[in-house]
Length: 141
View 1 (cartoon, helix red, strand yellow):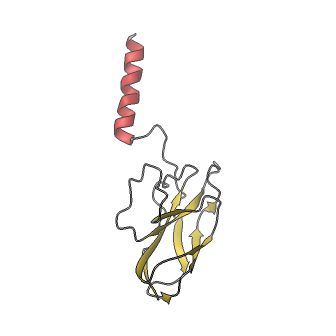
View 2 (cartoon, rainbow, N blue to C red):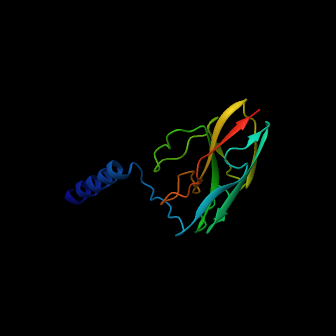
View 3 (tube, rainbow, N blue to C red):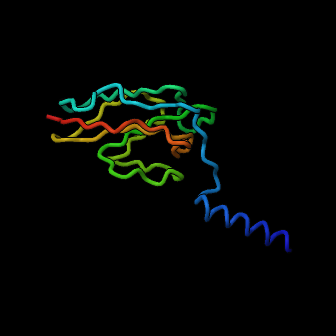
């Protein structure tokens, strides 16, 4: 009975510390995500073609567990990055490209918008350490 109690205490502690039973997927050292186009400050028309760049790692679809890979998530007008140990949301501000896509066509209303990429693992959880592009600002006519 004592062993069971210790085991449950350890598991509970792990949940409290990590918030998850899953270990974060490591990113390769030096991996970088970046936006190829549009460029920071560009004035564009909607729909916008966003081309994703990646160095130091590969792209694999969601659900595929292959070392040194992940898939892109495009953050649109996101101010604060959500908890890095939980699956990224999927909504108008968080676009998932779990098929392994390396570009997207995005409809945006007129005005200024920010775009940023973050790489997720097979479960849409950000890699650790984060592989995230610089945030760019574009203006849509």
